[in-house]
Amino acid sequence: MIITDTHTHLYSEAFAEDRAEMIQRAIDANVTRFFIPAIDSTYTESMLQLEKDFPEHVFLMMGLHPTSVKDNYKDELRLVKDFLAKRKFCAIGEIGIDLYWDTSTLDIQIEAFRYQIKLAKQYKLPIVIHCREAFDEIFEVLEAEQSDDLFGIFHCFTGTLEQAQKAISYNMKLGIGGVVTFKNGKIDQFINQIELKHIVLETDAPYLSPKPYRGKRNESAYINKVLEKLAELYNTGVEDIANITTENSKAIFGI
Image (cartoon, rainbow, N blue to C red; front, side):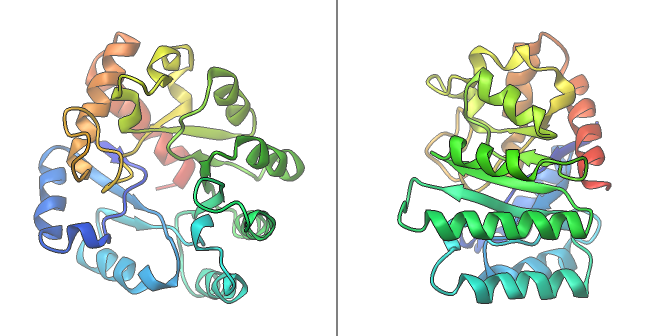
């Protein structure tokens, strides 16, 4: 059984004391594929080091996170463009719109999102979308940009059934993580109405720990709790969920 964590920040400072041990715990728990989203240039060296240390397990994305779209965003986007020209990445991400932390940057967040979608099409790569309190804005951009060569993952999906179906209509898989185990997470109430072919697993570690670790540091090994919850909701075996979601990740990333 191979389990794929399609979204984990293994380079995070939260793992500074025990990064190698934490990754080994995940590998021992059958989590052997880690897809690493970018945030901004301050993390690039850490990401590259992670790939060097775990070349068979770690796959890097490149992109500018919406909360890092600040005054210097054009410089950051230039670095994204330069890195894509220099070497291979598995996706453009995480990119999108975040209106939870700062609504004043909406215009430049949209500009950065559109620019990076165009880069994804140019390099024939999937996108990995970050959406926080911004479903309408994200969907508006996807509607304008939709095409056969636009595809990817709606990371940390926390919307409604209707929003899930809309995301899927834009060639997006749904990234399902710890929220599905929360009492008030709501997605557990309808997720089994979505065919498994549209689902991938993720942790977003060190954030959004599933029950019973909620409130503590998340790590990739805990994806097994997400797996168990989905097996319960879909009334099927954990191995089936692991196999299907890993195959879905291969279809998206080509790895």
